[in-house]
Length: 174
Image (cartoon, rainbow, N blue to C red; front, side):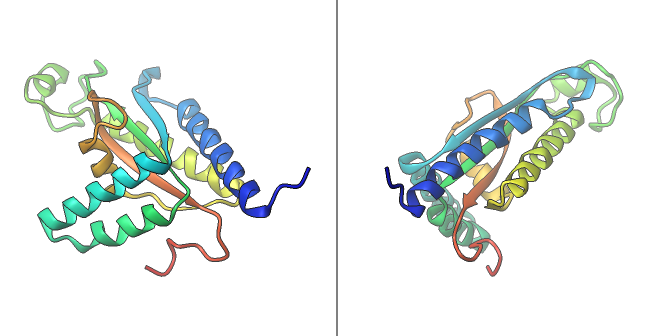
């Protein structure tokens, strides 16, 4: 059997993406409550993500959407990591509301969900680095993924991590 390098790299990127999802899943969570959702997009879904980013560029005029859309197009896969909403019952006021009940009634978002998302992202990109996979955390692609409900309608916040294995990282000189 002979496997060309390009095919081996593509296979490995998908394997690394799966490991990144696992790393996000097993990352520590506040109060032990897991609201992390993960997924991987390739092919048509990846292009839909880039197209939504271009739509956001047209809508907002923010140039990073257009720049990042090209990065998504140039990437083999994109790992999505998000969090669903809801109070954790800590009543800590860290979200800016008096308690979890007020936060929920006001449509707020638990601060610990955002912290958990950050820890999950850190675990995932650490895994990518261990595998020598070029990556970059993107809010822009996360917003587009949220708009497209790629991780489900209950997922409120998403960050995206495009993956690449080329001679030079496409995410470095942008």
